[in-house]
Structure formats: C-alpha cells, structure tokens
Image (cartoon, rainbow, N blue to C red; front, top):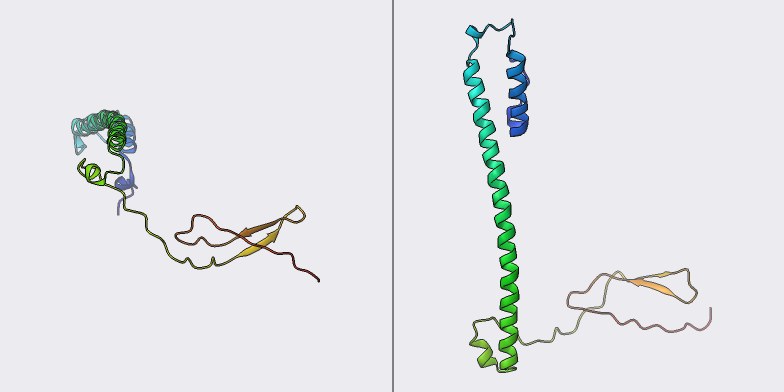
Length: 159
C-alpha cells in the first residue's frame, strides 16, 4: 500500500502544479534518491510540469478570450433586441389593429385575451392583529390566475 496520499483526481490543475513544483524543489539534491535511480527521470517530470503549466496558461488565455466574446455577443444581442423592438413598434404604429398586416411581418402575435373563469377562494387565510388599533394583516395562499384580491369586512356587533 502506498504511503503517499496524492489524491490527484481531487486536485485542481493549480494544486497539481504546486505539488509538482514542490516535488521538483524537494528532489533537487535529495541524497535519498540519487539522480540515476529516479523514474521517471527529472527531465521527464520537469517536461510534464512544463507541459501542464503551458496547457493551463493556454486554457486561461482561451477562457479570457471566451469571456470577452460572450460580453461582445451579449452587447450585440442587446442591440438586436432594441432594433427588433423598435421595428415591431414601427410596424404596429403604421398598421395599428390590422391583424392581417401585422401577421405578415413575421413577428409572433399575442393571443386574444380569454377569461380565466371563476377562481377558487384563497386557502390558508390568516388574519393577525397589528400594533395599530383597527388594523389587521391578512395573508393567504396565492390563487393561480388571480392578480389581486378584494377583501370585505364588517363590524361585528356585540361580544
């Protein structure tokens, strides 16, 4: 069983490069491991270290370029959104409410609004008193399709 705890699969490339640099430094002039007995050779270890460092630098450079290209694309996308929105607004201003003309633009049209129907009563209604006399706080679960709620109350006579 190996006495070393390398855990290379868990290490990032930066961690591997740090480990490699530490190993190369530690092996330089190490009397316990004569140069002639080292496998892989010092040159092979150094070459692997240099290759990984170069590959990591290339990835970092490509990632920087990639991020810059994403930013440039996002700017062009925002410009495109503005231009297309302006064109759609212009088409609608030129032929307002002319569905045939608007459909011929290639832009998707909104569906005609349809009634939602009778909505169920809200559930989990809770009423709590507040610090202000005559004021209550009401909460309930949201009802799909409802955009607002109208509450009614009445004064209870007697006690």
